[in-house]
Image 1 (cartoon, rainbow, N blue to C red):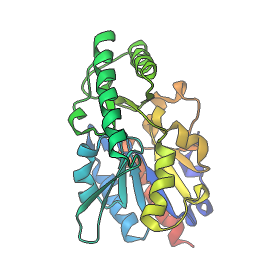
Image 2: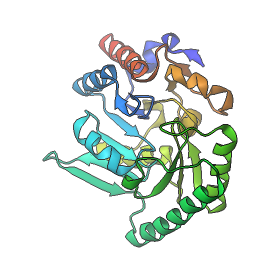
Image 3: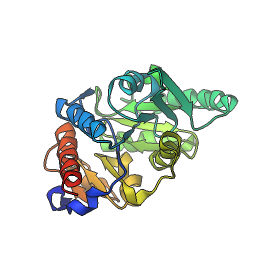
Image 4: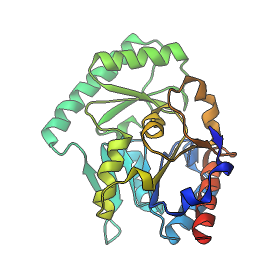
Amino acid sequence: MQPFSLCPPQRLRHLRGVLTDIDDTLTAHGEIAPAALASLQALHDSGVPVIAITGRPSGWSEPFALAWPLLAIVAENGAVMLRRDEHGLLQREFSQADERVREANFERLQACAADVLQRVPGACLATDSAGRLTDIAVDHSEFAQLDAAQIAAVCAVMRAHGLVATVSSIHINGWIGEHNKLSAAIWAVPALLGEAFDPERWLYIGDSANDQLMFERLPLTVGVANIAQWAPRLQHLPLYVTQAERGEGFAELAQALLRARGSA
């Protein structure tokens, strides 16, 4: 990872938009940093669309999809897109369109969650679990603490049930299906902007293990400084890293992007 200060302005100047994680990238302890919120507004006012892609549940994300100056939030790791319509009302869309499939998957997810709690000592479901429609989440660092062996054990149980399992900065998420953060971008950009997703023209910023697919597949990626705690365990790192952590790191990126556009 190179310092983000070394990123050439010309790489930022012609970007179409920004894709961002939420937890510990925009927020700390579940609350958005004032600097990040101000930066989202500045990007919005300058015509730079920002789409958040998060492992957080639909229920948790809905008020922020209405309140924050984002084009949309794609929640539950690519399963649920939340956006405002022309009247400012919340619209919810699913990447798995068949309701019967989602209902069957929900039953499988609950069975897996029960098995995790039975087989992994110390495991507990995330406090936001009631708002989850298409996945399950086990808390490892938000309000509970699991060590590396416990995290690995939770992932193993999820995968034994046929789930995809990923680890964010706070939760272990499990779901059924092929959606992920990259498919979220491929789905959301055409739906929101009416144009194909071009990885060359979008920047991704994140902070943890569940951002690795984006770090691997997008040419221009950034980690906020707190990614340092995860870096030794990551196979794919972002190209750049900000000097500041969390929301202040996002603000650092936004300021550089806006300066680059202003100098064009």
